[in-house]
Each structure stands twice: as C-alpha cells, then as structure tokens.
Length: 247
Image (cartoon, rainbow, N blue to C red):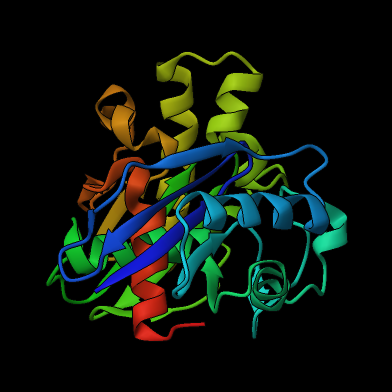
C-alpha cells in the first residue's frame, strides 16, 4: 500500500510516496520552499502543487509544525499567526480534494522511528526530539504515542524557552560552534532527562545527520540515538499516521 507523505517545515515542504509496509520512498522526493509569509492560503497552494506533482488521488498524511488539538492549530508555531484555530486537514482537503490526516511534525517523525528506526521494538518511555527551526518532541510508551507534546517550550533557568536557546536555528542565528551548541543541548537534554526519566532519546530533524559532532557534549545517563530515517522521518511518519488513522 502506498500513501503520500508530506512534511511541512519552517523552511521547506517535502513530500514523497511511501510504501507503508516497509517505510521506503517509492518515488523521488519533492521539495518546495516554505512561502513567506507562511499563511494558511499560501501553504495550501503549495500542498495543492505537491499533490498535483505526484498526480495523487489517494489519502495523504501530513506532518505539521504547530501544536494541534483535534486537528486545529493551537497557535501559528513558526509559520504565521493566522494558523491559530485553523483545522488543517479540512483546509488541505478543500484545496486538493484528497483525504488528509494531519499530525504534529515531531509526532510524525517519531512514528517513523517507532515503526522502522531507532525506536523499533523499544519498551518503556522513548522520546523523539527534532532539532531544526524549532525543537519538537514526540513521546511514546511501549510504542504508543502520546500526541501533541511541546517539550521544546520547556524553560531554562533564565526563563527563556529552550527552543529559542538551543534549536538549530539558534545555532545558525548566533553562529555557534558545534562545541558551544553542544553545551546548550546538554542543558536542554539534562533538564528533559530529569523531568521524564526516559529509556531512550532519539534525535531527529535537520541535525540528525550531524549528531556525531555534538553528542559527546550531552552527558546524561540515558542512551541517545540519531534518527535512522534522518530527514525523511517526517514524510514516512506522516504516511504511517494516515495508515493508522491517527489524528
């Protein structure tokens, strides 16, 4: 069975057709830069282009970078304030005619890792943390997802959100070396480890390909693994969410 998976990010919107039995991409990935401003209307037009590019008539799974509750955006996230209270699946269905399953983007990435990657067959508490424009989180207990966590918004001792302090966008904005960024990430993961006591932490997002450059700076007693699907986890997990009917 194949499902179109779409990963909406702060800088790019990526998509591919996914064979859900294996998690493999069965068509070449398509990427379109995230429009600015990233309003609902602008993003919907890109989604429409992607569906048309693949000539896709079936169901679509989509990972989306805002907090969601019953399909509605709780805020604009890193996109645009106009997303607040928008029902994303309905918007995209109206734009394309396709049935959509929409989940938080970090949840989608985590689903991919639980099905096919570093979290497969892992018992206990597994936390997926995506490091990119923001910091996303997905929490699993014995393989079951607790939806819509937002552990990127935990506060550091200065009252600043760890997302603005330690996301990959903060590294780029402040021109941090991998060493200095690693020290910030240590503070974040040490705090997360204290409040959640997980059995495994998986690092995903754009930084997943560079874990070896900073992981030695994160000195906690919980195993840390890079996401095996790397930057394709969001696409794969979105398709798997559509298969499982998660929303």
